[in-house]
Image 1 (spheres, rainbow, N blue to C red):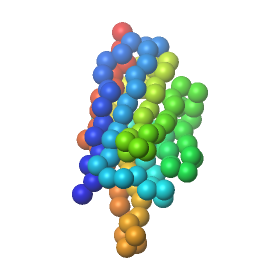
Image 2 (cartoon, rainbow, N blue to C red):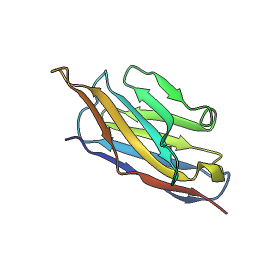
Image 3 (tube, helix red, strand yellow):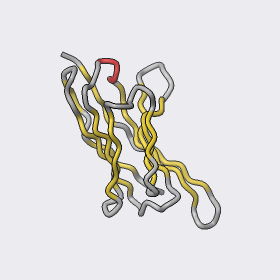
Image 4 (cartoon, rainbow, N blue to C red):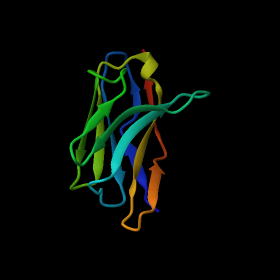
Length: 120
C-alpha cells in the first residue's frame, strides 16, 4: 500500500497564493505519473496537473499560467504552486499517483485531500 500525504491547503484571499505538497511513501519511478485533481461537493473530480520524472508537465486550461507543478524526487514529493487564486478554485485538492510495478500490475493511489478555500 502506498500512501500519499498532502499538505499546504488553507484559506486565502482572491489573488493570493498557496503551495500544496504531496509526499509519496515509495520511490517515484521513471514511469510513474503524479498529479493533482480537485473536487467540489456534488461535482466530478477534475484534472489539474500531472508531472513525470521524465520532465513532462501537463495542466488543465484553468491552471495554465497560474499554477506551477514541480517535483523533488529525492524526497518523493511533488508540489503545486497556485498563484492569482480565484474563488472558483475553491475545492478539495487530491494528489494522485499511477504507474506499473515490474510484475506488470498497474497501481493507482489517491491522497486524502487538502481543502483550498479562496474567499475574502
